[in-house]
Length: 624
Image (cartoon, rainbow, N blue to C red; front, side):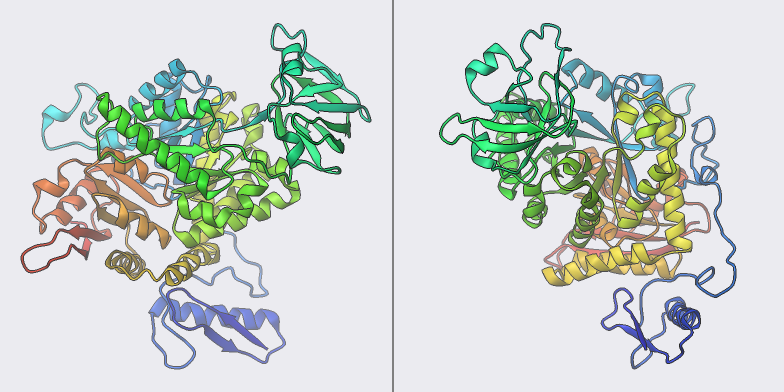
């Protein structure tokens, strides 16, 4: 029988044929031969083609008991037990990032500082709940939490804050994500609910009529007649379909539709439960014409732009037209805010992260991905909209598609849910985060765990340690998940016909870094294109991106492996010849590299008299 293995950046498959019936022998032989080819980068005529990566075959199937190399991930962290950084300790960053929702239990400065130092890279602001005052507080405290950048000591002593030893010019570049409420469907206010906390009981088997008329809304909902704030409800449902109330706490089955304007929908209750005022409504499998933005979303997005947020997570995106509508609205807001003196023309707009949480979003996923800057796998509502057993499969497909497109993807919802109340996660939760990293997620997200949980700092530390453990395992023991993610991008790039200069130098930088066992890839970038391309090849080493723009630096944070540094003068103060050396010097001062480390430096040079177009260059160096 024949085993075929395709290794990355190869033009043909590696084919090894063996007639042996011993499965273990054949697999071991295949991996051993492949490893030799990978380690030596040999070019053999025939079926073996030079690949681009290396891995070890120890502890692979051999018939012998393997020795597990499973160190405590807490020993891999860059921070100490006290959460203080040490310049003497080499920086060991995780490649995948943590998005953490900041709320009442984590918004105060002492806790925020610890959350930042524990590994939060992107702060999520949930505009379904946050007030303006809360947003202002959280953004102010984020800016006051410096993280690793506080270790940089400039040459001028005047730039060091007295008594702290921290830099006053190299601030925290952690990013901010504005999560919109979206055009949600909700029930109306209950009759007689003055406090807003009343509930009514719906019994299993009872008849519930869903209404859209103003009189039911004004008089209040009851257990038998519920107001739904969607006038076209009867047009998108049919008998046999399900209506889920309050995230599926109560499930209704449609039995009769009254057609015409303001027609009612008659249902029976599949189970008993309590319903509150303004409960969420899901219509699994239904196609609605809800707008991409609610009126509240428009107000929130424009306000967020005045606070210079970096990303907008657009809820309940159903089509690519919805993404285009949001983008056009932000462009309009930019012009209006510029006229008011609240926006600089030419400043990058917030990037749009489309949240996929409905059947329509899945059906139109490819077009949505093409229009979006990134994707969030919003598993909460998605698990209500589609069979919950299919959520993991949908997650894997979406992550794979984002890898192929070279766009960032966030896996979200209930990742460490039990840590909202407990200091330790369940084993299933650890497996969930680990598998998201294996799938190829750029970011994993915490919601209520950090927003209102009892252990906001511990949960970020725990997630960071899970990421570290998973990434170390894929580097040393099981490289195939990451290699497959890289191959998806290579194939996607070929399909798109992307043979640009930037793409070529990005691929070369990744290959050179792995060949040289480099400690880091250092990129000097104005707009962030080069580091994004390099990250798409998924190298297993950090990409240190020096950016003159703080906005560009923050918008790079969402990408796996990229660790942006805002340095306003590096691309202008030093000559083109001296910039790589300066960048290496700064990276060493940050503790990102140490003497003797191999590094790859990539730059984008401007056109000169001899060349009419900009050009990219790559240099290999050893840290002095």
